[in-house]
Length: 77
Image 1 (spheres, helix red, strand yellow):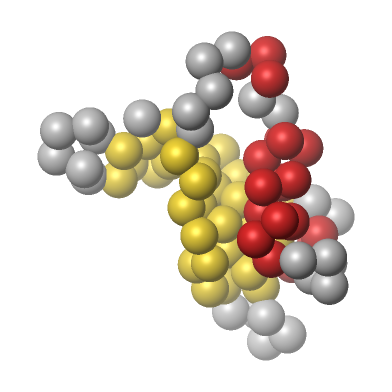
Image 2: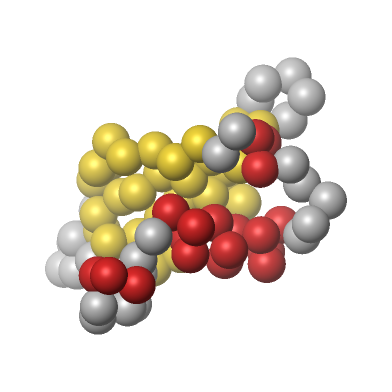
């Protein structure tokens, strides 16, 4: 299963995991960087700058639930 980990940068440059969004959409054309960021904005609120949000795509094994990095990071500047 594909999922997205949302991290928030603080003023000191530390990254804090704030949520994980499992991808449930069947149509890959509907999956865009903007649509993933929109979910993060709903969770984090409008007071957070886009430059402080880091989204990391991961794969979660359905049987073992082990998380694998996909090495796709979305930074919004």
